[in-house]
Structure formats: structure tokens, C-alpha cells
Amino acid sequence: MSTTPDPTRLPEHKQPALRVMPMPADLNPAGDVFGGWIMAMVDIAGAIPARRRAKCRVATIAVNSFLFKQPVSVGDLVSFYAEVASVGRTSVTVDVEVYAERDPENPVVVKVTEARLTYVAVDDKGRKRVLGEP
Image (cartoon, rainbow, N blue to C red; front, side, top):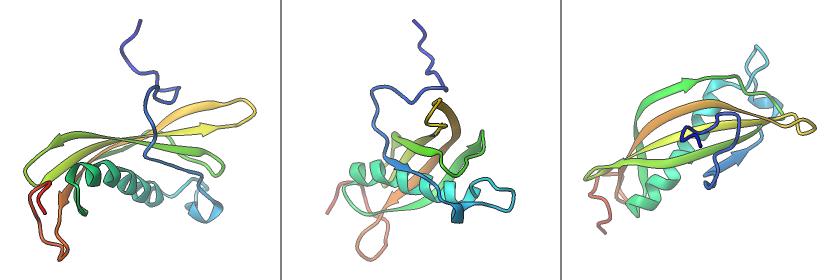
């Protein structure tokens, strides 16, 4: 049995943090989904486990890496899987993998993006704070 995940299938035993279908307004001039839209959705998806771990509001402080592997099209069902990669005193780093489910009549799954982002815990005034403290 292979231990390497199959990039042509959605991750098993994981729930997506976010699932979205891009619309025509999300296209770039070339007809693909605008990379900025994907980046925004990755940021939202990554913030979900970061916020849960921090137990407070978080702010994105770094996009450590971002790789576009395949274009995304209107009508693709895009799933964002986010998982905490590491935890610091005030920050949480999250890995996000993005998959597109294409052609509902003959389904195909393609890994389209992977990213690593770091979020910092912030208080109600937007100042950095230690994770899990009130």
C-alpha cells in the first residue's frame, strides 16, 4: 500500500476547511480563475484552523510559500484542506492544499494549489498576543 497521497483524489479521512465554486466574475482575462481569488480563499481556509488553535482572532503575517500547479475553471468545485503545521508562542503556521473537482459527468480531481501561511494571534485591539491567553 502506498503512503503517498494520490493527487488525483480528494484527501481521504479529512474534511475541507472550505469548499467553493468560482463564478464568471472570478475569471482573469485569460479565462481562468484569477490567482488572487484563489489566494484569498486559501487565506480564509488557513485562518480557520489557526483561529481554532489560537482560541482568538488571528491575522495573516506571512505567506511562506504558494504554488499554483494547475489552473482553476468556472464550474470546478474547489476544496481547501487546511492543517496546522507548527505552533509558536504567538503564531500558527498552516499548510493548505487545494483540489478542483472537474466535469461532474466524468469526475476528475486535480491538485491545483499548495501553500503555507503563518498567522499571529491578536487581541481585540489588533496587538500580538500569546496563544490561548485571554
